[in-house]
Amino acid sequence: MVPPKVDYSLYLVTDPYLVPNGTTLEEQVQKAIDGGVTLVQLREKDAETCDFIERATAIHEITKKAGIPLLINDRVDVALAIDAEGVHIGQEDIDVATARKLLGPDKIIGMSVSYVSEAAKAVEDGVDYVGIGAIYDTATKTPKKPPIGINGARKVLSYLSSVSRYVSTVAIGSLNLKTVRNVVHLSAVPGRRLDGIAVVSAIIAAKDPTAVSKELLSLVRDPPYWMSVIPNRDVSSVLAEVPTVISKVRTETPFVHNIINRVATNFAANVNLSIGSSPAMSENVAEFGDFAAIPNSALLINMGFGTDDWVEKYLAAAGAYAKKLRPIVLDPVAAGASELRKGAVKSMLNRSHFDIIKGNEGEIFSVAGEASQMRGVDSTSNSQLQKKANVVEALAAKEKTIVVLTGKEDVVSDGMTTFVLRNGHRYLADITASGCVLGSIIGAAVAVSLEDRFLAAVASVLLYTIAAERAAVASGVRGPGTFIAALIDELYLLSNATANGDVSWLEAAKVE
Ligand code: 3NM
Ligand code: MG
Image (tube, rainbow, N blue to C red; front, side, top):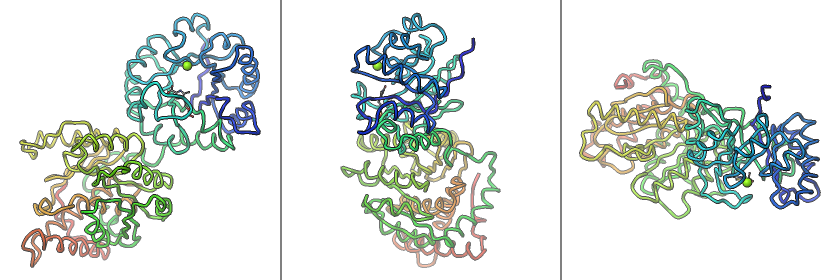
């Protein structure tokens, strides 16, 4: 007999201690099932065997009526006693072979894994699914290992995609309304994604388990806007749309919330104004939610200053914008320069999605976990450029983002299409914060072009680098100081010209 295909989308794991006062575990489970839970695991760490069996019988009545499987945590004997559909076992519990012998071939056996090595063993032992975690620290269970983050889940999925037998997967550990979307969709690798999520407190402790379950299920099933990439793009069709984005910035006045270092603040605000966008420079968590609720808003996180609470602050801001489905640009300033910065970038990528990541070669290579090729090498040789393009494209695909690598040549990729842009001027390297303010322009552009973030990135880079070329030869420009003023002027002039239908400046674009 072929076992029925199990739906792992929303897997409820129970905990008797987290049930709110005035209700029962049984009632909470019923309400959760009403909201769409597809699988239940009864987890009773302290119950006497007779009580465990009694409760399992009651819960099994509920799950049978709903037509969904009930698994028992750890206790194969309890599973046998009530003829449950399977068991979930931990790394330190009964071995899979013994469990399989006792339960037979048709029961579901799942196991907790944190690493590829544990997943490999579980696959070899013949489990039906693995619970990958803990993704994040959780108050529900004292962790034996450090949390593995989205990247840890990605590694296990990547391994499982190479295995011939299909082993199902759920992620566990602080999965809730805030974390589920990123964990499920960002962890996906080519040809493989999580089959679902396992949740304890977010459902069991909820006042309204039905509503929470419904919402969690849609977060698991419906891919967010940033999962779609436009295929088959060519240079001329993207270039043709550049003026639209630049005009829209002027006509729609997007709100760009810059969390940016002090060195760049004034320059960035002036640059935002010059192209028609409306800047705000706020680091006060209390107003992030209000800003994110502004239509046409975008957030720029520029990691220029490594202050004590920076990651928490950035993540609070990112969470506020993600909740409103507004775009977030990350500028991982000096990402590889210290252990502090490397760790900060890692935490950010494990906790948030970014719509566009912009940095120079050293920064982008560090974010991608690649050794930078910068020092002592001619980075403009063809093989070096090819390597850069490969790193940018792979990072964009992995993080479901647009990556902009700035330098003598700028490289932009959505993970599928990669452009090399060759405009710009040497003076950009002679002034401070020239990279930072490009982030502010990208913020404005992506705010009005959420459906095409690659275009927003290309339009931003072209506007900025062509403005720099023109500013460098503008009358009165004698060096970096006068160049800054002329750059702001040129951005202003080009933006206005574009909005008035004059796009002749774009003929200078060098894109391939
Ligand atoms: N197992 P919550 S984490 C039961 O890492 C359990 O294997 C974990 O609870 C593992 O959804 C966990 O409330 C608790 O964070 C998850
Ligand atoms: Mg266990």
